[in-house]
Image (cartoon, rainbow, N blue to C red; front, side, top):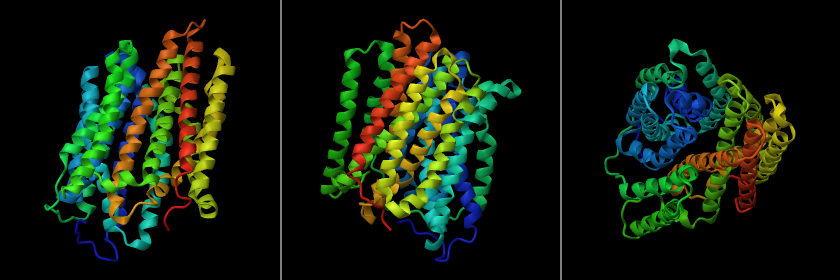
Amino acid sequence: MTATSVPAVGYALRWPALFVVLTAEVMDLLDALVTSVAGPTIVRDLGGGETLIQWLAAAYTLAMASGLLIGGRLGDIYGRRRVFLVGMAGFTLMSLACALAQDPGMLVAFRVLQGGIGAVMLPQGLGLIKEMFPPDEMGAAFGAFGPVMGLSAVGGPILAGFLVDADLFGWSWRTIFAINLPLGVAALVAGRMLLPASRPDRSLHLELTSAVIASASMFLVVYPLIQGRELGWPAWVFAMMAAGLAGLGLLAYVEQARDRAGKVTLITPSLFTNRAFTTGMVAGMALFAALIGLSIVLTLLVQVGMGYSPLHAGLTSVGQAAGMVVGFIASQPLMAKRGGRRVMHLGEAVAIAGFVGFLVTVGAAGDGLSGWDLQPSLLVSGVGLGLTMAPFFDLVLAGVDERESGSASGVLSSVQQLGGAVGIAALGTTFFHVVATSTSASSVEAFRNGAAAASWLAVGLMAVAFVLTFRLPARARE
């Protein structure tokens, strides 16, 4: 553990410092959400075609997933405050670079760098909270994340739509990245003043071999899912996916071999033999793939298919975001009475009902489909997703030993990001394939059919999560 100068009663400036940590979380969440709303406008400006919309989101989340495995360890080695501030500075600079990008390749490359640097910054926040707060205040500190993340989920798409439509200074979509500049500078100044210093532990080391294997494996899975349709699904695309899956198996083997040899590992190897944890990883992959993937499909349906402006498209997602906030709030008393696993099962069932309602709505409403028609199903699915996600991390970590908790948290965060990237790739590709091959009389019908097909895939993913949840503990650790 990293030694700190924080007294047992808690760091004196802990509550103002918490807002610095939350600012980083908000910046990350906004950057993960805004490109789905601004994507069609970016394509019209820079070109790049349909797959650029997928890559704008997937490149960020894929880089984030890869980097999170080593981000936390960097804080242990060099000090969390220092790494947090370096990460915040890098994230802010990459946001500026994204705003100045002149072609699709440049923008995607900067999104990769932004996600990778974000993965260095974000893990430090959780560690800093543990350093700053005494045990009796820890719950309140972590409890602040829920409302802030909920408000960001609601406001992010709306803010992105407003900024694109407002075309401030003639910058159009570029303002969705430029807005990070004042936030980042303010967080840097406040962070230097408020965050506690941590003493580095230079006896620790990074295990880069496994990090490279993990990153390469994730890329080999996601790249062909996004590019395969555009390339006509050649045989090498499927070979890449198989190699990616084999690479993840190789990662587990390498980590176990290094552990037996007494060498430093990237992931605590005993996690691979923890059935509840490995089951939870697969369930989390399916859950976040359905959530993130269907979000981008919704944006494509209303913007490209129905001709909504970016702001109108952002407002259409309010029903689901508001439902998630309701679900998070309702989950707390339910978990106290019934346990997390039952609440998670309830949430998954409600989310599936919402997804089915969504696909029924887009199929039955015809070409007169409006954003108001979608709100009931989006609200229901949002409540279900909120109920599902609230107990998820605690349940998966319930069977993990204390010595494994740091590594397990990093792996789960990576799985969350990787699931989002896979969902963007799989559901987005399904959507575009159905639209491109549709023989419908109208383009709106083609887009409705694409959204319905992607919804069925989301239903299947949630059903997988529902079944796997039975293997999780009934309650989280007290």
